[in-house]
Length: 107
Image (cartoon, rainbow, N blue to C red; front, side, top):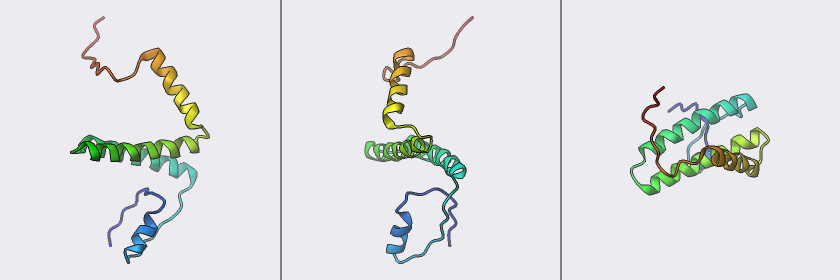
């Protein structure tokens, strides 16, 4: 029996059971949950990095966005508040759309 020890989407246990298998799960404490969201975010970012097609990349971005929604909920921040912070940072420092790659800074 494979051991996963990782955060999964809420309906995965039902999907596993619908496939005729059983699984063992536990509900994480809030501090553990937040740490596992961070771990899962890294996992999904690596999968985005390794995506072989635009479709796969978009699927991974959707997973990352779901994790963002869960994390901000845990921090008691609305998506609108997060968007305001994003917009403010973009006004102050710009976005990432131009593809600017900083090579070095000389004194």
